[in-house]
Image (tube, rainbow, N blue to C red; front, side):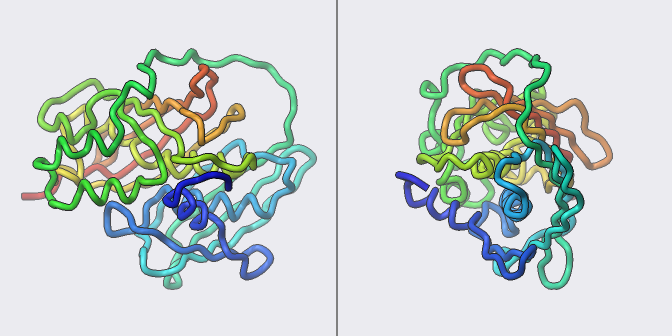
Length: 294
């Protein structure tokens, strides 16, 4: 944790779980944009818990998770780790997050010792340099008159203060009413430098990955999302594959698209690239996407 601003320090403290038994950890929550625990926080904390039971020479290469219940931001979350397997090359962990006696989240994660292998990747799509794009503080006030709640701009800025996240094109709430191609791009990095621990960078990317992935679903239908009151949504499941080393405190391009929405659900899939074009992460998420009844 080096040279980081206060919001990033607060986020790092949030991910620094308390160990209460050998494989049992406790975490707190922070304020979120909506009145429930942010899904990216639970996923990142669960991955921290799993990673703390794994040898340090094994790095996370995949996670698969289900969001079971809305989390209560006013209560601690207890994470119980099952040591499913410790093999010669791979280690598998299962984590259950519990609040008020009920599971709210389930994660399976796999870790691997580094090894050489076949190499290929999809090319990085074109995108403008992140430095040319407006910051959240510059962009969000433009849409203040579209938001249902007058304090939405402040809630966005507070909840995302630890992350510099910049949209390549207008976000869903900026173009509500006009369907677009179901694709969205954002650049992101932490607002401050991080220590070199690979698990920390993987957990920070996991945290951010839940912020915008379903945007592309909304764009396909000209919906602005909860902020403008035309959609009710929540994450259902989330999967990530970590292909190559990266740093979450350096710019990453989150290239997102939606191949389908139906049955009150929407699917988002994405690739995350380093600024020099290396494919670092693949992500898939399904979420509830419902139109409010009048």
